[in-house]
Amino acid sequence: MVTVFINCFLLISLYASCWFAVALYKKRNDIADIAWGLGYILICAYLLLTYKPTPVVMLLYILVLVWGLRLSVHIYLRNKNKKEDFRYAAWRKEWGKTFYWRSYLQVFLLQGLFLIVILSPVIHAALAPPRPWDVFTWIGLCCWLVGFYFQAIGDWQLAVFTRQKKIPGAIMQSGLWKYSRHPNYFGEIVMWWSIFIITVPLDNSFLFIISPAFITLLLVFVSGIPMLEKKYAGNTAFEDYKKRTSVLIPMPPRKV
Image (cartoon, rainbow, N blue to C red; front, top):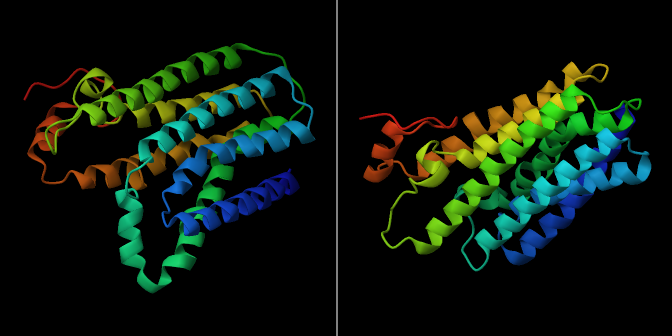
């Protein structure tokens, strides 16, 4: 199993290096966000061609394919004809002379490592002995569909709002965004916990709880919510919205 994980990391490192070259040519590191979802599909394709998939494993591949393809297309359309994402632009200024090697290591290769960690339950399932669909498969699939709804619809609602926004600094506060400040992140987290649930019956599956735990930690405390909300610091509309709206888990708005 260790050899397979090493092979997957080597493959994703080559993949990340190619995207780094594209980023240098385009002069924008946010292209890494487009590569993110497609990288998961690449690893699943490698596993599919290397190991005969069971019906449950095939389901996992399909879920990753749908998630990764939708996310990459969404990010491509969101960034098209726009300046580099503010987070990457800030790093470009902050890193100065160290920009190139830090971009390669901290953006592209590091994301590749994160990808392998998050995809680890799927890699584990691909190598495990065959098993039939069971209650965990159905529970995981149903939960995944809920998560996909929140991420896909949340992203779509925000994209429509952004295109129609007429007042600078206006904040999305309707649809799913009325109940959560980050419904798309909520959906993302639910989907990866769902994939873990599907793999629970496998031997040693508890080792791979690191996958949903890691993506949860990443989005809630590191690169997701904190960085995005920092962008709106001092925005009066956002501060009012923040007081009455749940940060992540959808809940009825609080009365202020």
